[in-house]
Length: 301
Ligand code: GDP
Image 1: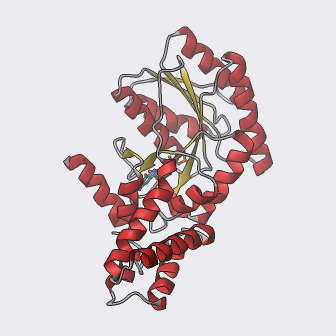
Image 2: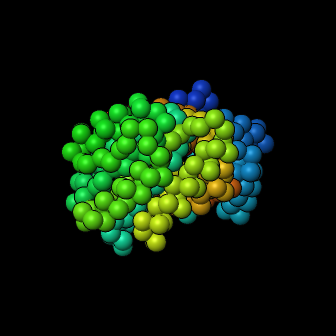
Image 3: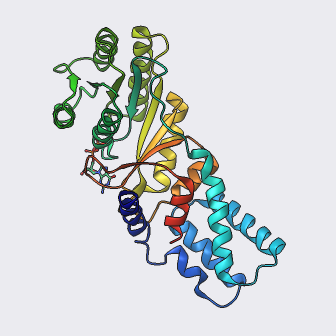
């Protein structure tokens, strides 16, 4: 469909921004050590990370040898296949409907695109017929609450907030309200930055515990929003938030403007938290489900 082609083009254009795009590695006439060296450098430039890069190179070399492959273009096809297989475990849909409400806690450092992603996710869920309630649990920044309010208005959904309130209390109220009003989904927006990372993790853990008091099975999803532009930094965040909160999924933003999309390979290799969605723009509709093959093809285009 044309819609799908449009965002894939955005993704490709973004991923292609690096000076030495990965595809240029395969334009030579033969398969030699220089090709593998160029490939290694290009993968590292795309922020694939040392571990995933070594894995991909090893796997490609093995298959090239086994298959008796002699042309560089065939190496590219093999890499596409190996990368797709590496990324495949990250493919997982966000399932709504097993619990009512499904409580989704959303974390992410400031600037990652958390608020925008919550707005997009609200639209995605509303379009699928789910009723959504937003909880403004980032009570530290008045601006955060206002910004979330703008997205609530755009989606015409209700928002629960409190002036300078306690983040855990707001979350508790929102989950209770969601239950009482029969909402399908409660989306909890959390703070992105506190004085130290320790404070942030304690704060988020507290929200998680208190939400559980409002509904023993909640939160049903704990999502982390990461900026796809930040490469290896994003991987560090995934590890830290997963250690503290046991993440169930990721939203990877700004893939329309980055050459560092290889970080998803690093995540698949080192901390395979499912990627529920990718962000490919600033508009409400710029949220797409993650598809390993499409992503691999776009990265190597
Ligand atoms: P927060 O601090 O994590 O809540 O981040 P915001 O949601 O305020 O987003 C920070 C900036 O990133 C804003 O200018 C957004 O428009 C922009 N942004 C968010 N997601 C995307 C995306 O997928 N693509 C692009 N190009 N920009 C994005």
